[in-house]
Length: 248
Image (cartoon, rainbow, N blue to C red; front, side, top):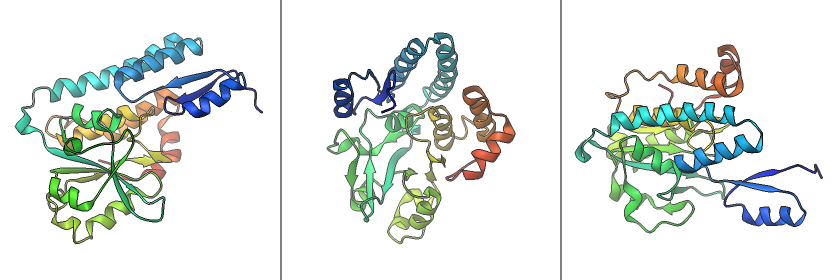
């Protein structure tokens, strides 16, 4: 009914895209999962919106982050890399489900780039979130756990797990190595514009000795200024006041 000139969709939304195209509404698909896909999608948006220069400016921001992180973590031996679980705590169906992402998704790639070893690569994974049991988590017993929750307060979820007697048996919990992803309006682990900040955040939490100069608030303020033109006061009013998760 809005008669848009174009509709942007994630690449998995082909059913909706086909319907729109039947209505003669142009569709552009975005992948956004790997950095290479993100680069191409950003360049395509620059062409689509007739602003290629701005697209290159924003891509430079991500280039700097990715290069900084990989330059520091590529020196690590495999023995220096902690085992990591990325756990999505989902309660949408009225029951708790723990899920892990496919190996080719941005969440997994971010952990690998940050110098971590994903523990869930030894099970049969689906092309979407895969449900895992606590027994499987206990068998993995990862050094570090990164936690996200898209439909509830991730800080509250973390507190719930920390007092659970089963979770207290895990090395990551014993050693205070469970981290809740930053979340304001929605979780920042997802492949949207804020993934650069959380790439730095992930690397900092895995290897603080390599990223001792990381300043979360400073990076976030600079991001919102570059991408949205907000000053620090606006950031604190709209974002900082709503931030959940582990903020260093």
